Image (cartoon, rainbow, N blue to C red):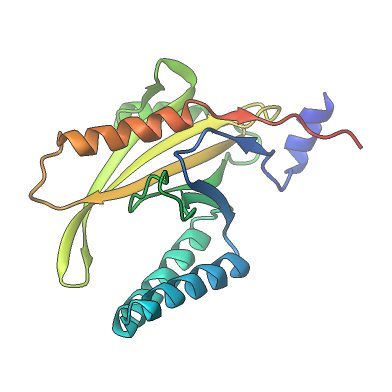
Length: 207
């Protein structure tokens, strides 16, 4: 048994560091109280300067609910547009990172087969290391209904014998009046596919 196998059997608690090429102006943030406080502070400042205190009162609980949902899903990081620059790609979207683990003594091969059979999962851009599938559902946002889209990507974490996987979920929406093959929607999907296709694991630092 190698050191990597032993670490996997003992249940390593952290996901190895990784990176990917993001849209201009997007950054990685942790799912923690510091990030939440920073986002709420920036949102409040922006809306108060725009003389829209009611908008802040409406959006604050939505942001908190979003964070709680990420925590429940086991998310440890997310990627979204944050940089106040003209080149930033501003989209009402994000990519959420979490981990999937197999049951003790098993690997994720059964899950992969289920996703292929039931969700229509396919290799991302022909790369069998990453499975990709989509989901969509109607959700209520205030008084409106939007179609919530999710693109789910699953790739094994190196050195874990396919017992652990990184899951990335790109989330965005469209109004029901827009067709599922709307050009902007298709470009959004291509953007996220292109980002995840650049995922690379960082070599662990020697101690």
